[in-house]
Structures are given as structure tokens and as C-alpha cells.
Length: 219
Image (cartoon, rainbow, N blue to C red):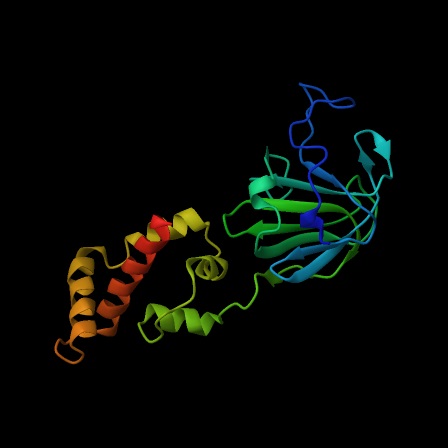
């Protein structure tokens, strides 16, 4: 089993003592043995530990996740939608000197930050991209120039542009906006009868890019 297989046993915003309505729990806790792998996209990023406290009980083995709009994860949001999602490691601690003990913080593709705390072992480094097989920056550049179709996914582009996914989608929808109808028609003509219509690589890329984004948005 991995950490994701364990149910949340003490949730975000819980007010059970020692927490309260005024000072609710800021993350999700999952009770689990020490040494359970924390896996993101088939990568074991860390193993669970037993530092800190669980619902007021000290040193009870568990995993704590805490998400926020800031890297320190203090402007908190419900971490559930961002748990075990791909992203880039932006911070970590390998000692047990603070309330979180050993921890890692990942900036997810959505732009949200999430910390995995009370770890016994960390297997990643700051700057490491956790997201499976990622295209190189050169492949991304070629995609935009129209030389590589199909190109990387929107999520993969978000990693390399370091942009929140919603902003990236918005920006990409503006790409070649004035000529996208013409470009899309040229793509359709080319696919129906290759060589019948002259089109620049930028026009082909622009048309296919818009079509791909529209398919993503439909989902």
C-alpha cells in the first residue's frame, strides 16, 4: 500500500480538541505505520514517519498534508484536490527540528503548494520535477514552432513555463487568436488533401493547438 491508499482520518478544518472553530486543523492527517511510501506519478518521493502529534497525541505515526497559496502553506486551502499530484519540489527539510519534522513541499501544476510532513525519509531534491516522463525544454520549443505534433500535454507545458494551469490555458487560447479560424481550416484542408494548401508551421501549430485546448476544456 502507498500513503494515498490510507483514508483521511483527521481532516482539514476539523475542530475536535485540541483544535477549535477559532483554530481549526490546517491539513489532512492519515494514520499509517512508519515507512509507508508516499508515491506521486510512480515516484516514491518519501516515506511516512511519526514526528509531531495526531489529534493531540504525540509521536503517533501518520502523514500530514497541508496546502496553501503560499510556499509555506500557511494561507491554507483544503489539500485534498492537490494531494499526490505532479509538480516541482520547491522546499524540504531533512531534520526533525520543527513541528513538521522532515517534510517536502511541492508546487503542483495548478500553482498551489502542498507539504507532506512528518516523514521518516526523503528521496527527492529541490527543483526535481515529479510527473513521470517529461519532455525536454527543446521539445516544448519545437512544439510551439510546429515541428512536433502531437506535442506535450497542457500539464507538461505548465511545468516548463512555471505557470498555473488555468493561466496557461487562458494564455494558450489567445495564441494566434486573430488567425486561428484560418489556421484551423488550413489544418482541416491539409489533413483532407495533404499538399493542397500552403500553410506556415506557425499556422499549423496554431490551429492544432487551439483544437487540442478545446478538447481539454471539453473534458
